[in-house]
Image 1 (cartoon, helix red, strand yellow):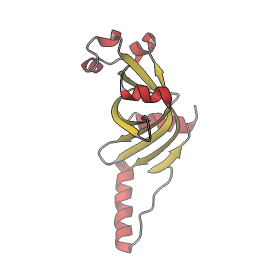
Image 2 (cartoon, rainbow, N blue to C red):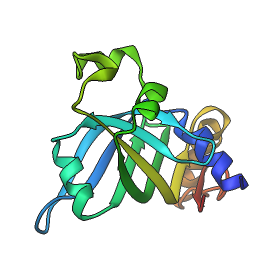
Image 3 (tube, rainbow, N blue to C red):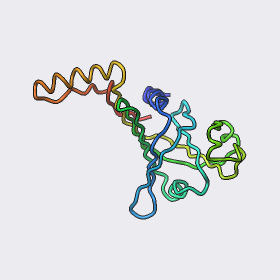
Image 4 (tube, rainbow, N blue to C red):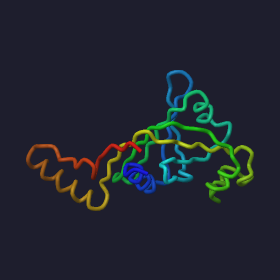
Length: 163
């Protein structure tokens, strides 16, 4: 595992949900909120959905996916990759969490369950939490007073990953 993959896994672990953007029929994009079911050490990100959902149909014709993560205005992450569908019962059991029963009343045995695995190809992050937030606020205040732009610390508060 490379350091970009480790960094990506750590970043995704800060979020519970993502907006999943798929390529809908025609010239349209579809964006839906999705709960992160699991993040593997390889960087693969798993989601659970219904077999007959629009995003499943989108992925059947175009596997390109963009994930957009955001929290309370401190952390942002985008992940571009390829999505694959999975109905393997063993994997469903592995990623299953009891709160998913809200969407699948039949539990983990619900025949409508389909998993989406996203294999990241590129990610970009903005991290203004903790010390980064204090540093950014300081840099922004200095830049404002000087009539300049704040310095972005590449690799720390912003960066591109290639897992």
